[in-house]
Length: 130
Image 1 (spheres, helix red, strand yellow):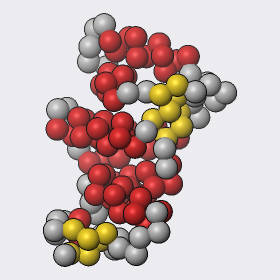
Image 2 (cartoon, helix red, strand yellow):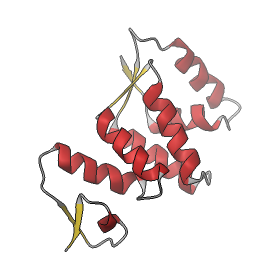
Image 3 (cartoon, one colour):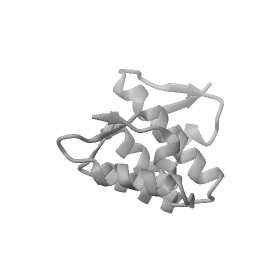
């Protein structure tokens, strides 16, 4: 298994660089179930942020990209169940990917609740306003 950094993942998903995108594509084409790529939570959150802010993907498009990664047999996503939960919240417009992931990871870690000043995040059942 090999780790995949944000810039490689973004180049593969965006296909926007004439040199780096083909290199990223070749890497992804070489991945197998027996020798998959690993995508950390940090990489996922950074990728979501870049695709939203720099590329202007809608919430639906971003959720679809995350779902494709979750479904890929050649990728191992850290905390897949929590990533899935956050992707659903993003898809339904309930919360941002990062807020939903923070809440899902806190539940996974055994937290009763996550305290926040963010009113939008507080709409999630995992959060409470401080």
